[in-house]
Length: 138
Image 1 (tube, rainbow, N blue to C red):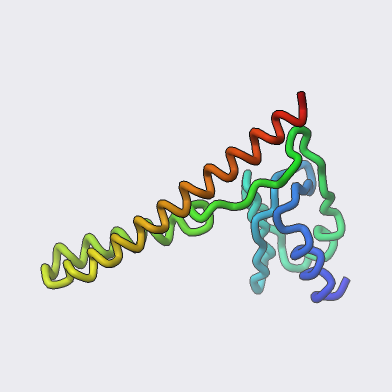
Image 2 (spheres, helix red, strand yellow):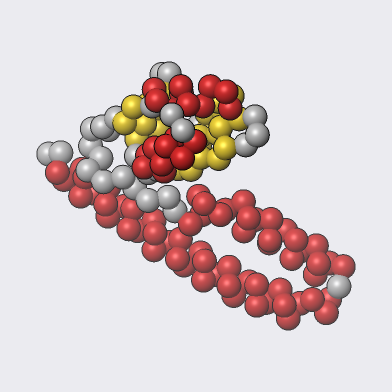
């Protein structure tokens, strides 16, 4: 399998439930480094040596998860929660060092509140999708 074929296969599996060597979960993203291929699932990370990447990619199987009519989207908090936390901690440090940073920190705070509201909307959406899945299984 050529590199572009492997990349196309992995891209086609994003947000699908997969299984590889007894490990399973929804593929959130993947990253190919110099020495390893990292598959980030909603349940765990799978690290594969670069020289085994083609063979491993061929062995990935998509799986059906009973009760899930739709794959739940990856929430904003799941995708960027650590970045938001890092930004908040950095702002706290800046405020402690320099009180003149406070107006900028207020703007950052307002933006983060908007992100939180967006995340709440995403969670409500995921709950709605899950409830439809539960109703369809009755």
